[in-house]
Image (tube, rainbow, N blue to C red; front, side, top):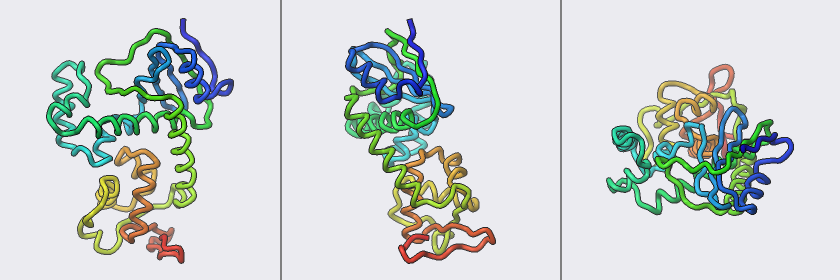
Length: 251
């Protein structure tokens, strides 16, 4: 029988801790902020964390981290579909030699941390625990320590709070400045290059960039700050002028 409750009565960290300590097996679904987070337990051990958010799909995260390019991702997804969707994407990528086992493990772990961090957001929501439900075979997963995962998720939430203080209001547009208007500067990380590419079609706000590239808030924010610090992008004032650097070195 399923267990259903409100996050206002018991929050996500406590739920994860309870099911881990009680060595439960099944699927914990957390519905918050218009998203669904799925955590699969096997006798108290977290074996898989997934989300309905498209920005947190494994393939997108591998591309975001510069571990895979888009053409290879599309080819692997096509092969997965031809196989009836029964084989994990990570297994297909490893077979082709496009990602290594350590890279895949790190990406899956980072994916789990981001998913749990979103589930810990202070918003109204509900949870459902379905006992005995096994994780889907076509999704990559690695064993995860609940306490380690929660600690990392809390650190990410704190990093996000600090990041928001450094960024302008969400409605403030950014645009390319200087040489970046003619070509992509060398030495950019993958998310930074994605931001530069997106801004080539015109000024965009943070929410517009997020939709355009399907990046999570933390990755996008760090990329934007890095580009601002190096003078590659700048915010645009209401009158259309580009704002100058401040005394702190930020735009």
